Image 1: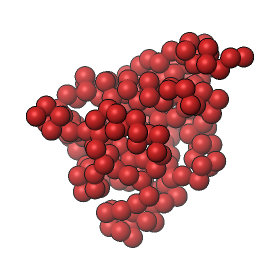
Image 2: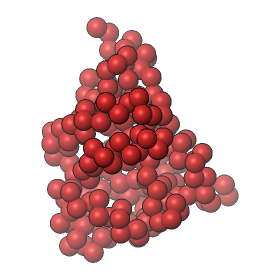
Image 3: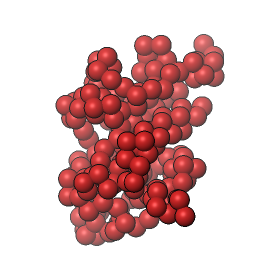
Image 4: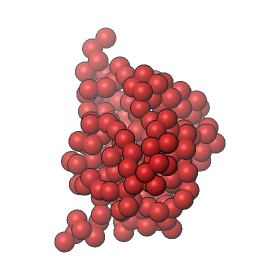
Length: 186
């Protein structure tokens, strides 16, 4: 099988209820990737991912019926902030630009639905930092991100949460990145 040919045929789209059957695969793929890489990750419940799909706030990538990647959109701080989270690409589809396609669609969905919101993400991955930079995100201190306690509570399931706690939410292994539409328009 020619993986380059397969990657070209992958569909990247906003997920809806017909894709609910992929929830366990999505969560398993995210958990396994975090384990293999030894990176932190905020774990989400099946119900949480189902909700994002039902609300039209999730992006799914499929090669035919085979799961290839995922990302979801969440709002924080009374919709003043939007996070594009849970970005995952199945190992065999990595290195061919699929993460960039998924992230770009999540970014566009965020801009369309929440045009005045600041879009942010936390990542330890250089590839995601590069994609975010290409979309106009800038590295920022955590103080420039949402102060919504519900967002930061999601970090509790990360293996690095103790660092975030010890530094009073000022530092962690993740890099905070922010796209501010007000600064972009100037």
